[in-house]
Amino acid sequence: MDTDIQTKIFSGFQDFKALVKKWKADNEIIVFTNGCFDVIHHGHVDSLEKSAQLGTKLIVGLNSDESVRLLKGFDRPVMDEKARAIILAAFGFVDAVILFSEETPAKLVAQINPNVLVKGKQYEVHEIAGHDTVLKNGGKVITLDLVPGVSTSDIIQKIKSLK
Image (cartoon, rainbow, N blue to C red; front, side, top):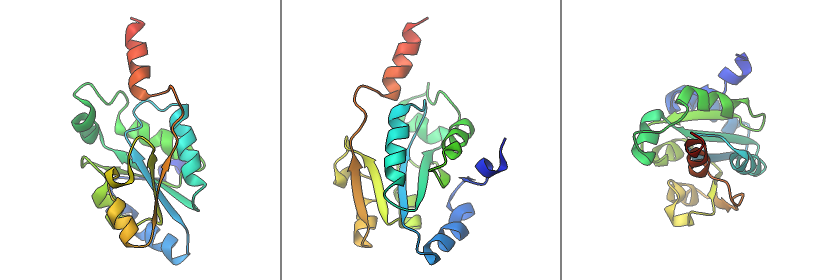
């Protein structure tokens, strides 16, 4: 695997801390988004690309396998955290992928303190983990339109129906 891809993947905030400190010192505009990204589809690509356009560095918080099971059930994730992290890190517009094991990335958002926090419009701003931290520190919370008619759950159901 390409070493450039590997250098974008972090097992937690402690491994990432020095890099985010450097980015802040360089006045980078840091954008943070997160998700399970279990079966990556064009809706994910669309939202990640739009998120990247909101700043100069895009950080993706990635739910660990344990965290995905808490949120989605025992039969998920379909792809393990290593595979999901590699795919996300392969995108040129993703600058870092950080795994987190909690149910929400609120702690990670507080540690990073991004300039911009992004999620899909299925969430109200007050429902987005870490929104309070970002707003309190002068950042922005932005919700993006989703690509209609595409979801990981629907894709998984379609695959199961092919059996």
